[in-house]
Image (tube, rainbow over all chains, first blue to last red; front, top):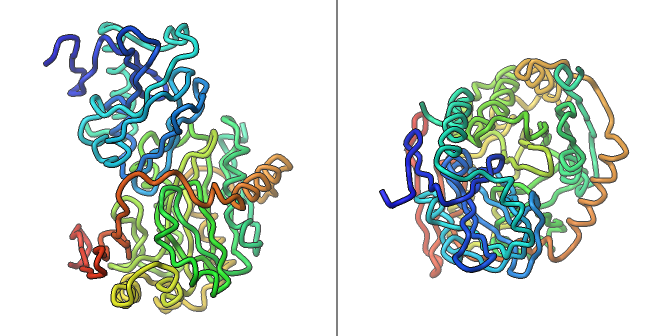
Length: 152
Length: 289
C-alpha cells in the first residue's frame, strides 16, 4: 500500500487528504496552490450505488461550501454533489464525465472537480490524519452496517 | 412530535401537466429537516413526455411529440424518457433527507415495498425486483425513480391503469425496425391494471391502498392535508424552470450517446449507429430469459 494510505474495515483512506464527514468526499490539496481536488470516499461511493451518470458545474462556477457542484445518478436516483469547501471550479475530470463508471472502480483515484479555494480556513471543518480518520470511518462503517446500507 | 407520528397526505387530484411534476418537486424543495413526511398524489389532465435529468433530448422524436401535442418536461430525478397521461396515478413519498435510508438500495427497498404491498392489496401478485422495479411475474407494473431535492429525498412511482404502448414507442427517436421491436417488447414486459384483469380498480381504491401501505410501513398516521403557501411557491418556481430552454436541454452531455433503450429492468433494446439492434436480457432471480 502506498505511503500515507491505510485501511479501515477494508476501505482505503489517505492520511494526507481531508475528508468531509457529512458528505463523504475527500479533498486533496494540489502542491503549491490553493487548488483542492475533490472525490468520493469509498463509503460515499458504495452507498450511492453503481453510478451511471455524472454532471459537473462548468469551469468558472463559484460554489459555496454545501452547495451543489454537480449531480450523480445511480439506479434512477439523482443526488447532488455538495462542495466540501467554497471555491471556483477550475477543473473537471474529463475521464469521469466520459466514463462515469470509473467512479465505481476506484473512487480514491477518480476525482470529480478541482476547486480554487476561496477560504482555506474551511479545511479546519474537515477531518485529517490517520488517528482521527480511523475513529470516524470505523464509526461510519458501523452506522451504515446497522442500517443495512453496506455489507457486513 | 407530529414529525415522527404523522404522514401528510396531499391528494392533488387531476392537475395541469406541469403541476403533475412541479407538485412533488415543490414539496421536496420546501421541505425542512424536521418536517413530516409527505405522500402526494396527482394525475395529469393530459398527456406529456418526461425525461430524466441526465438523459439527452435527442433520445426523443421531438417532431413526433409536437405532432402529437405532447409537451416535454425534464425532471430532477433519474431514469429515461416516459410517456405520462391521465391513465396513470402518480404517487410520491417525500421525507427529510436525514430521515431517509443511507443507501440508494435501502431507500428503494423501504419506500417502494409499500407500493408493491398496495398493489397486492388490489389483487396483484406484485413484488419489488432489481432494486427499484415493481413487477408481476416478469411484467413491469410501475415506473419509479428517486432523488434528493434540497433537504428532502423523494421516491416516485405510478399506478398504471392502462398504457398506450404505441404512443410510448412513437415518442422515441428510433429507426422503424427498432421501434417495432421496442413496441413488441413493451407489450410483452410493460403491463397495467387493465391488462392484469383489474380494470375495475378505481383511482380512489388505489390511492387508499397506497395511503394505508405507506402509513403502516413508516409507522405513521396518515393525515389529509393541503400544500402550504411555501410549497405552492416552490411548485411555481419549478414550473418556471421547466419552461426554460436551458433546463429542458439538460446538463451538458459528456458520455457518448448510449442507445440502450430500457423496456423494463433487465430487458434492453441495444441500437447501433447503423440502425441495427439486438435485445439484451439480464437474467436475475425471477426473470425469464
